[in-house]
Amino acid sequence: MDMQAPDVAYLGPSGTYSHQAAHDRFGPDIAYAEQRTITDVFHAVTNRGAVGVVPQENTIFGAVVETYDALSRTDVFVRGAVTLAVQHCLLVKSGTRLEEIETIISHEQALGQCQEFMRAYLPEAQLVRASSTAAAARDVLAGPSSCAAIGSKLCAVLFPGLTVLRQSIQAESANFTRFYIITKEPTAPLPGPPAHEDRTQAALLALAPSPKEASVDITTIITVLQLIVARIDRRPAANGVPFQDMYLLEVKGDMPAVEWRARVEKAIKRAQGSGADARLVGIW
Amino acid sequence: MDMQAPDVAYLGPSGTYSHQAAHDRFGPDIAYAEQRTITDVFHAVTNRGAVGVVPQENTIFGAVVETYDALSRTDVFVRGAVTLAVQHCLLVKSGTRLEEIETIISHEQALGQCQEFMRAYLPEAQLVRASSTAAAARDVLAGPSSCAAIGSKLCAVLFPGLTVLRQSIQAESANFTRFYIITKEPTAPLPGPPAHEDRTQAALLALAPSPKEASVDITTIITVLQLIVARIDRRPAANGVPFQDMYLLEVKGDMPAVEWRARVEKAIKRAQGSGADARLVGIW
Image (cartoon, rainbow over all chains, first blue to last red; front, side, top):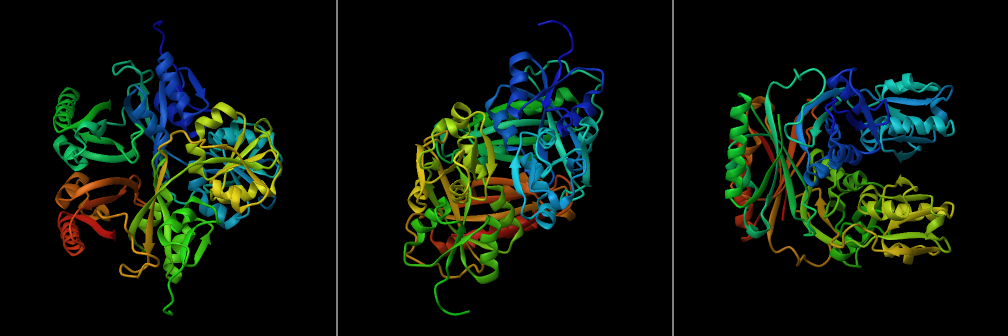
């Protein structure tokens, strides 16, 4: 591997909110590599050492399960988080009017966030899922004028022929998406300017009752950590045992980085001692 | 309200896995009322006292967020749970061959569960979300022969002209869906034969740090309950505060019903005393 700065892989194509969040964090002076799916972002990180930016959570729609499943099943490391304010637009080919729209294309989270708008103004429209908001915008450009996309204002700038028909169509004005920054190695250097937003320390842990100690309770595991828990998320363990779970815990602290790392590592050892499968998925 | 047995509302139309789960629990001798969405099942329960059957979780795809959000925001009561083994089929109009399929229609959970099959055999097919697997089957009957649905084998029996092209196309063989039974009143009588499956006691609690006591940690709230926790699920609190969460905890016990109720009520009081907004969403 050469010494040049790694590129930043994000859920593309260009114009997605992931693209915008990556730009906000790493600036204009590095290479960005658009990916087709969230899973492809993880592959870019594991296969060729790219830095990945993946959506973790939205204030309205909640946790992004594709990201959580990939985090629990892939050998990557979370290095930080960035938060972006989301403003959804209804995008159409120039000239299309609201009453002509029969199909609305977007990422499932954007469709979820704009349910109320669609119920009120386009209750008969068919909803079609796309891999991203920007892919939906391209589909609209390539399709009949009865199609609309939900996506960023940036799309109307990037793609000539596309117009913003309605702005801020999401259900709530407090619409933020939070992203995780992921790398293959825990100490891989990050490109761009140093982070200034996240002063508070955090870490992400993967926890599950060990199959050998099925009697251990998730409450016990969380308690022995002796850490402040910011988020608890449950996903199927994907080990073939019905209804067996994996928990991803984001914990937080406010202390020097060295001290924080030591405290988290001790917490994981205590969880393992209590009969849990426990591993560090990220620390920042 | 008259004295006749309440009907059972489920995510229709007829032929869905929800329909099958409802039948398995309540038998053939009562009235079933199909609903268009999970939200409509909740409305049938709150508006006219129907018994509702709503999907809570699938072993592969995880928790059903629409159900969790409705449980945390609607005044209904969980009365029990039923578990169903799911076997997905690829359904087409009689005569359609695999290589002719251009569009696959289904509920988002079924699409998620069959991702590997579609990636291997139909990577170019467009995915279209429907409100249920059975609605998708009807869409296929009404559409061109290039459309396929993912749904239950029952659909091919209920809808003449529909054929099973492939069976058991889900990613894992251990595919189960668990459903909650909901009523408007905590003591409303349930129709059909008495439940025999769930001997273990359970309860569902909604917990959130009280806005007045923002410093209270979710770990503290879970610990003071002194109950065995089976599931922890996190959803946005929907109070307009970005990244403020609501937790839904399913807890379990194994004791007489009266004792169990007293223990859960005491646990909720302790959580409230620790600065949490806590309420009972269901007990069985």
